[in-house]
Length: 235
Ligand code: ATP
Image 1 (tube, rainbow, N blue to C red):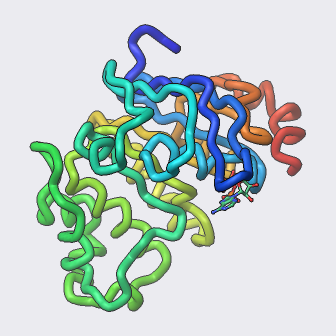
Image 2 (tube, rainbow, N blue to C red):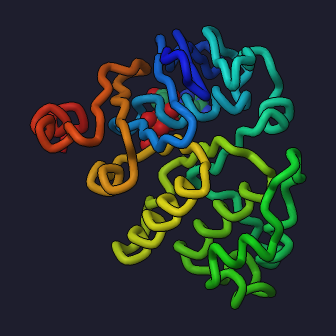
């Protein structure tokens, strides 16, 4: 990986029980970058994020964050180092209010956002302070899920398909949120199937296919590689 990388994943393999699904994932992320993992359904993007977060028990390879090897670290330790994961299913608790959902994760590092700061970022959420999680729209739930991990103090955010199932205008909002977080110095790994959206927020794209990273495309070269990308993604 790059000398100055914040995160370097090398030769990552992972299993669900006997099922071997990652066969050597390699990528790195520099401080302040937004990179995407692009690929078809089942390519291994979510499994890669879960592996970095330490959620999957059976893994092999190397995950170095800020110079520390995290391959054998439990997920609470990974969180303490400053990595946070926002799952595709968002994990909003239906019976809890917006405020209660925001208060759920512990602040594991100094510098985590206060609830007030999160509301500055997402004014819509403030209006819904006392609403139950399930009363929110899909877009509001996604904002809440992202807002919630900002409380932890993590500087590396792993976002799993934040645009999934959302209307175009809400997708644009999510894009603006990601741009704002980048401006504030966060580093982001984004799993996406929507490469049109990915191209509006990311610096570089890694293509995942059958449990391997098979290509890396700088965002500036995306248009020139559009045919290749269509073939990779089957669109
Ligand atoms: P998607 O967009 O569909 O989530 P993905 O690229 O994120 O795609 P993964 O979810 O990482 O893909 O899945 C990689 C492979 O692992 C797939 O073949 C999938 O069927 C398998 N898999 C995922 N979760 C499990 C699980 N809990 N148990 C067993 N196999 C799983």
